[in-house]
Length: 361
Length: 43
Image (cartoon, rainbow over all chains, first blue to last red):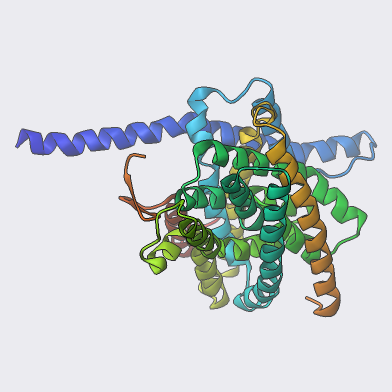
């Protein structure tokens, strides 16, 4: 009897301890994110009061920059690492909640445009990255991981593909480092290019959702341009994320045929397991919003809650980016990724501009 | 990889994935707002 009571207590203790371990990192995420929000509110007012001509810098950029400074100077304390790593959770919860700001008709219309552009992006990215990897003499599985990461959705896709194609840890960490480094570069270059080309919010948002690989960086790059652009980036990136299962399955079948990976038994189960569930949550909230399940005030609250979740996400993006660690991973995978990203970035930009002109979304 | 078992490319997890937890948490928050338990979320 005593043993029967002791077991759940131990499990509870373990779960409580696990939750407690997250607290310092969560506190750091909240502090960095909120500091970014305060800076957005006060830096502009301070510049205005002193008659300085300074652009209004959004909390997105402040949170990322403060996070980058912490990560690359003092470093993230070990006690905070587990909590900081939860930024992926906040990202996905934020995307689901953001569904409240879309009417289903818009999702279907823009999702349709995104789907066509995503299909073209997938074909170009996989073909070109495979060619580049071979030209630079990268190991074949590292090339596959880079192609999956560039074509679909960055780190999540690489982790999903790693298990399916039985790539080794070194290849996956090289591919992840390259994708994260390029995502950090995109954060600062994409808004500049967008403004230089006077892109509309829709065109820019779709472009960053199509061309920036990691989901957090893609959405941050969109939000850095404007709130509306951030919404379009979420839509394009979510459409791209939905393809993860198909691309990883195709690679798994390819490597099985090469005799270098286990065969996939139940393909439907495989697809379901790899499918990002937050896409379904996003669609569900969008359907509920379209059916007026929420009042106008409640929709505003859901949008605000999504912004709080993204605030933690963007702080995490900065805190997780350490250039010193990335530098140690070697130059060749980064060079392949960089060349690939430039080509994919240019082609998707042309595609989006053409779609805007001819389809007029 | 505690808590996971890999067979033929499919990992069998005991609990929910991070993805699914994020969906559950977001839907729960949406329901609390809908029910008026959380009347207003400021920004």
